[in-house]
Length: 213
Length: 252
Figure 1: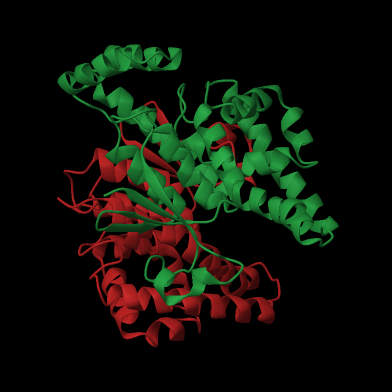
Figure 2: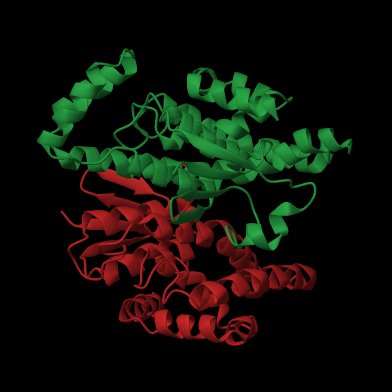
């Protein structure tokens, strides 16, 4: 029985899981959830994720939600397949630190910028310039720390590509299509890291999937 | 060389790490960081955590930050010591050795865990699935509970400490958000003894600092109103390891 991902191609959280599955070359079924129709708040979806958020995930009888729990499950259970998404032969501890950094320091700021600059206009709402400015300043500080880190380590968690890097991809892809890209471009190590991880074939496959739907 | 925790007893993130260390009965050195004096923004601290936040952690040459990365490290590295905080699909031989140590310990919970491990030892996949679910609820604490609980704590506890009146709108909004999360917890705890699985894990432990703070405020009514949640909170807060954390807190 094939793994199922319930979600929306526009959801950064769902994208995170789709990228991981593609990195590992795993077969899966994508089950679109019609968020505009509020499908994610209906009983049959709440049975998969009581928080009414995408994605939800099934592997046989196992039902999971929270994108970063799902990617970790995929990375662990299918560690022999495709790209290793953990640090091979090295302690995971530092990779876990930078996974927490993505979730705790980068994502809140990146999400707000994405909401203001991309999603609000899509829903016909006005961008709040003050919020954008405030969050750009916060992002700049985070990226200064990333610049220092990437001067010591090829990727964020260690010297190979791991979930610590992968988890950034959905929001990065969105922000690099806005004027916020200048914050990334202005920092050489960060800029090179962004170019490197965004050139990965797995991301290209997910974006192709997004463009089809 | 003993593990070092740099932080503040008033920081929920720091006490989260203490809880894990006490659960495992591990020795450690606490190095207080004077946050009022801005010590967490000074170079020597930024060398430990470039984000200038407590806690920071050292185990020999390994330096870590982000409280949930630290607890996870402790849970896995010291898996054989004290309370299991995570579960790993292990082959039978290793489990047997562990069980021998455990049956020497007195707690009923440990015995249940031993029996569980013995029953499931041949089936690493079952344990892996259980751990996958523990990870889900560990994420839930961090992404759903903590943002709301933090805002509420700032409003109710920290402003009280600094003599600033709470912002009524923030309290109302976050009270409603917390209610939604707790309704989901109530449903979950009707199916599972603890949040992640039938045993206490990091998924529960991570809540302790915020729970303790909120139970000392008007927000406690939200927890008291839900029987399963209320029992779970009482259970967690009564854990001897947590009592030790509060005792440590009172020393500073």
